[in-house]
Length: 75
Image 1: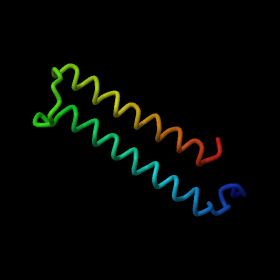
Image 2 (image 1 turned 90 degrees about the vertical axis):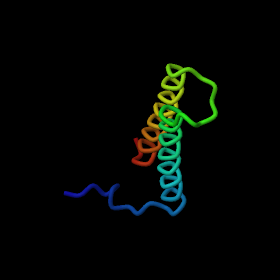
Image 3 (image 1 turned 120 degrees about the vertical axis):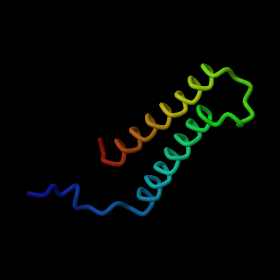
Image 4 (image 1 turned 60 degrees about the vertical axis):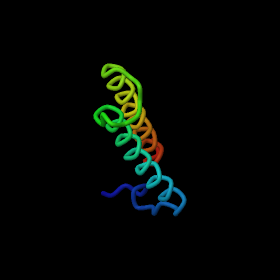
């Protein structure tokens, strides 16, 4: 049997916010990877600091996406 909650269509606002959250996730992950691996980026950080800072950006993006996915499914 199908769940009646999954049959309901999402409002345009919820759909837009989910797409916006997914786009934000992609941007934050790309920014984290740029910080980690793009040497010509004008940041005066050591390699360890670049990996740490970029990893924190990626972690933040993943946590935001999990939060958006949970609220979108109603949990």
